[in-house]
Length: 204
Length: 204
Image (cartoon, rainbow over all chains, first blue to last red; front, top):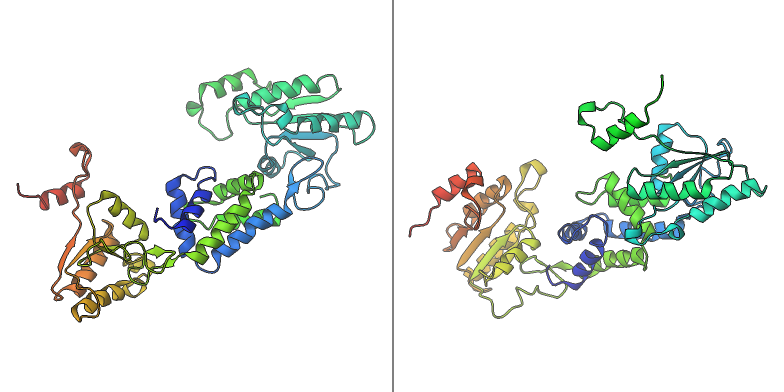
């Protein structure tokens, strides 16, 4: 670095972003220094604004800048199904498929003992409460819970935990299917995906 | 995106950074939203501070937060040699080699007709003025100019332009050597580098 304190500070802060190493952070800092049209001011304002305006939806924990998020607030969606996802960004993936018209519940992560994330760090109790509220007449009755979690060890652990705690509540509980992606060449599919695709074969 | 205006704005601003696409910008925006310890405030402050404190050194156009940059201000460095670089970051590369103890001159880019960058967009006239000032007794006499520009088409074009305009001023003018990097396997060197290494062979 050029031994300029303000530039070193900016590089340091930028290098805390995920996937941005010290070298990239330095390149970004130089870009910012040379950028025109009040770019640093605009980025700075956008940073403060996002923190001030965006909060978790109190019902599903998706991000929102209104009281309830747009999916909880939409009267045209079914209250009977909840799709459980790890992150708010996952909702967009599901929405753009157009295959689900129920409500969501965002866990904000998955159980990962290695990273010290247990069920208490996630919005799991809130999910159980939502289902119990329906059973006890304090909220809409939930008939189906679809788990759309990542297909990795943490996702699987979280699914096992949720399955254990949601059983016996009269719910239809499912996880999204794993198998060969549409349009892909069978020759290039890895062993575990192929194993799962065979195991979960669908009768015609 | 989640149709949240503040989040979309932040993603948009982040995606203007070099090497940050829309998908990465979205990931960064989510990270910032979840970050703790006043991270958005600190990053925001660092952005404003760098713009307020850092400016070009009036002599060599390196970045600085003091009147002259540390290399122009250092009385232990020789005034007789100037090393010309494209970007302030290049100075650090040269400094850490420990092989140069003169002054610097930062062009802030290289001649690139494709990108519409001509000699007038760079600090070339200022370099000529520095040399002329020495010749006419208004500043320190410069005896040697070393061109440490990138080994690409733009660097070569800039070197040709500078050579043309600096000739006849009684200077020792050179460019840094191109050849096989120290420690590398000759088998893996590309044709152009090897051609240059043979052409510029050093007599023993």
